[in-house]
Image 1 (cartoon, rainbow, N blue to C red):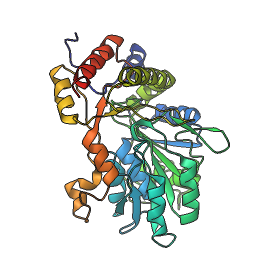
Image 2 (cartoon, rainbow, N blue to C red):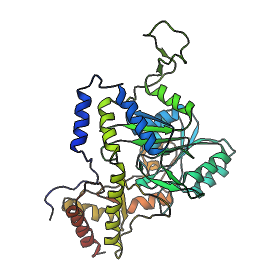
Image 3 (cartoon, rainbow, N blue to C red):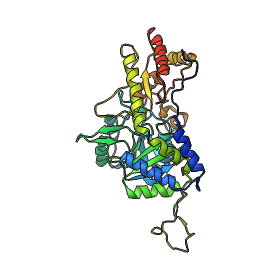
Length: 387
């Protein structure tokens, strides 16, 4: 028996993490110092991209991508309804018209066939961007999105906030790390406490496009630059220019120090999360509990372990009674009151809505102990025996 609450997600902070932050506190900088560039360089090397811009959170990352792509009032952007609302909101901030595309019933990611149906129904160039989400850590096939992007003329912004360390295999048999932007224009990450790399808040944009990187970096810091190559004049070493209307979306030195330390454990985190997932899979294989799908050639990052059950609310309540805090993720974005005002309604995304009626995220984080997982499994099996 477990006598404490088990959350659905939790940060893992080591003594090395603590010492990294303490060292940053004792340094000359708390923000805009050398650790941010060091974190960006280390992240780029791990992911395999050319440019990383660290920002204040994942939502800021999405907003900056929209700005970098010059999304304007009325531009159409497609995303999935099964995601946190930030995936849509980041583009809505720029006035985009959000179009939702239903999900694949196996992966719970955007359905490529349904996406193509939407694209075929309008002239080329109708949609400015498509924002697929690596939901729960399952990497989308970015190569297939690239083929559609080239045919229909849109930019690809991958919301990979659930999937650092995930990968997929392309048609040539090459492993493609999520965020390397081999096929995507931009990729966004989050460093929220329940994510793989936890810096409190924080996020990142990766790209291989130097112009997009320049725009993201400029908008991150008020639209201000001191780069001599970009200035319209030079008055002295103090001189800077505000060239665009930007934002304060900076990450701090303290967060960067923590991120650098946590990045060193990302491979371990992915391995441990997959071990936990396999144990869940084995435990529930002969029950009516539906476990997550895994395709060939992918590395699932397992930010979330989503099951489906006919009695989701009953299981949710039963687990809470036993100090297990599962979570329902996500309420379909198109059913939110804000997006209903644009005409979206129940029934528009039938697969997403069916998913929502049955989904439940069990505790999934690398510091979950064997004893804790055994208790979760025991209680789920106890409930499932009555189904």
